[in-house]
Length: 451
Ligand code: SF4
Image 1 (tube, rainbow, N blue to C red):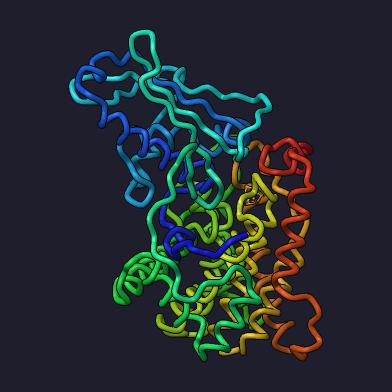
Image 2: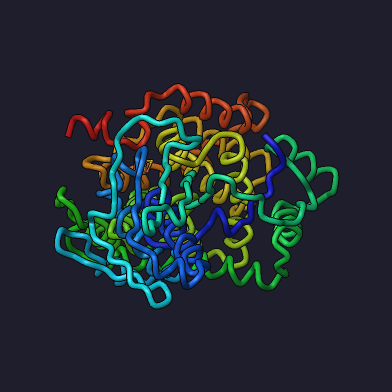
């Protein structure tokens, strides 16, 4: 599968929900294309006659519910996910009568709902979530790029050249290799991750820590906003936000275990509901699963009073688990179902809790493996194409499973644990590739079919 060269900030990204594949990836594509248009000569720019965005795979099947059209348009209007204010997207209507103007030099391109083509045919693209943006001039195609939104907000395009990046100082492909490196070099996992991040990106230690603290702050903010925002989520389901009520009720509970559990669920609901509302979250590792890690981070910070430094190190350590899952399987619901989104988030979260709690590496690996193992086979079946049912509750279940997985691992003898993390990731990959397409973010199978 190759050495992992992903940056921490490619996995943990700040951007608008509700789906990293359907909003962050397509917005990046729109932004990239807007830069390409700017590079045309003034003669080419004056000959522009129109623009077309073609959406394929689950971008077409569930893109309306996810707001893919608005995300591409925001990108074309020059917005990038990490900087796009939520109210900008909220106000970006693409109903029948809305007209948007893209300014290219002295040329103005009209953009309406008719410029988007939702293509539900079967194609042989290398990735199912494909979009093609074309710019037309007088009788010719001036520009065209085929983009692949490959999950977690990662974007590639046809013919893309490998971006220059440094080689990791401690190269690894899977968990077994990573544990060996830690032993050989007598390193802690956060130290290894920092050394690799500096080598890959060229960022210095202070900048990496600053960015990690910002990620944690956005996670905590999404929880804070979510537990205080009442009302209904957008879309045809009419789903009521539940986090505020749950949070309020948790405060009145006298039974400690129940109170903690309800708080954990309320935090996961809060961030997942913010995501469903199209507000800013952190892909951890995706938007659809953006409630799991913020929930455990909030629990550790608010209730166990762990320091920012402890949580930052544990988050960094958990990113290694996300990298290994992405490298050897997938974090895209369109590729391997929800086991790759909420399953991987839960796996990372179990590792994070264990690490932050001072468990040794073997216990942390067992916790991560247990959390992932019990998500195997989980399909992606968002009702009416909206990241709401089953997604929001599923985030809470992912957080609870993560916590339980850590308790099981902590209270057992590590050597009695048979299945290693690499094996669970391999099983996830095999299971996901065997899944019929209906169960991979098309809204044509499972709950989406029955509701
Ligand atoms: S079911 Fe899971 S993978 Fe599918 S959209 Fe919801 S959270 Fe994402």
